[in-house]
Length: 257
Ligand SMILES: Nc1ncnc2c1ncn2[C@@H]1O[C@H](COP(=O)(O)OP(=O)(O)OP(=O)(O)O)[C@@H](O)[C@H]1O
Image (cartoon, rainbow, N blue to C red; front, side, top):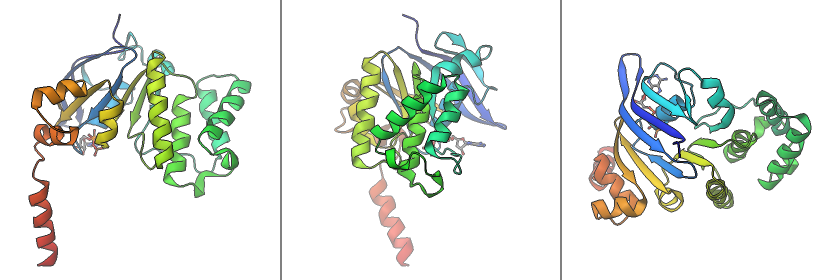
């Protein structure tokens, strides 16, 4: 089977600063891939590159069988993307926003209306469906964004911190949705800082540090390789941040000086 994501020696720059330093990666359909790493490691940059937002990359990237450099539109039709810090059109209501998104994907109006209303109801937003989003909480916005990324039933879903701001019930629901999408053959590539969630829902975990992949495997494989008790501990070992206790002490000391 052809990989859904196929990356060879990907390098990405912001100005003259090299952010991604030669990423090689192949992802099969039906996998939930957790892409984790410290702040600034290059997770969002990778995701933005894979969705075609940062076209000036070096290396080869194929997504859903298409060369991203020459067939970006064909890729964009079949992927969904939920960004980390999205600017929603606040003055619109969720229904208006989802109509707009649905039309961009050329869905027919009747199906947009039906799906948007149903998905908002399933996220508990049926009574706010026609309110302006200016007063929406972070979690309510995140729910609208998740729906907008899924409305066109993409084959490959990129989620940047998908659980951000969600309450405990919504977290459980989104975890279930991710699992069931993958069971139906879709691929989910997501980044998160919530290690116990990553541990539980990922078929495969990729750790990136300073623009390079430093670990790649199922949680069981990574655990066995490093003899670590938790993903948090493994993350600390691999990304060199295992000294939080000392840093916290120094922090408090500085505050109280
Ligand atoms: N638009 C930009 N212009 C210049 N530098 C950028 C830009 N966006 C990100 N960077 C830099 O690229 C590096 C990687 O950023 P990126 O957002 O990919 O990290 P991340 O792993 O997603 O981090 P976080 O966990 O904090 O979201 C960081 O050093 C960041 O400062």
